[in-house]
Length: 226
Image (cartoon, rainbow, N blue to C red; front, side):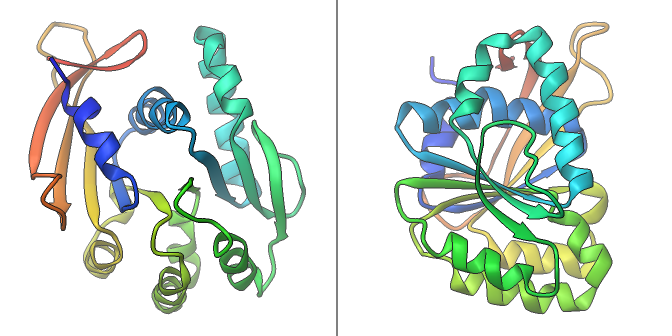
């Protein structure tokens, strides 16, 4: 039987998807065990845009801990091309594609880089949630301009912590994305001591992706549907 995620992820090709999450482990497992494996199999070029040294460091520490348990994913991560916005060229994994110095022009420079992408590419954003805190309403104007400039057929996956996804931010982010997913940890698992998560399609503008919610446990290789 095809699982909810196996059916969902292929339908995200060519769309702009936002993932709202409340657990770093949940979003990490969705990306590394479900999203990247699929797009690797269909030979997409995989790009990860990282904002700031602090978010790059967090990603590095997270991946290092994951590789201790799952060393087999290292080969896949080597294929990821990093677009780094920060103060140095160090990347948490993969290969540095472009380094953009963190200055007043970084957003324009990032737009120029991603404008070169196309239908054969997957672009994932990491760390950009903190931009809205730093720049408040100015962030919305810049974000609108940035998304307006993106190529139409690039597959985009953006993510934001649930704690930041409130008020005017929620309304703006929904308008900028075709699909909104929620990945949330349940308070209680179906089995005592078992981590349980819900993954839901909260918004979809395409008929191939229906609004739906499913419950998962955390298995050895990512999410396993109940």
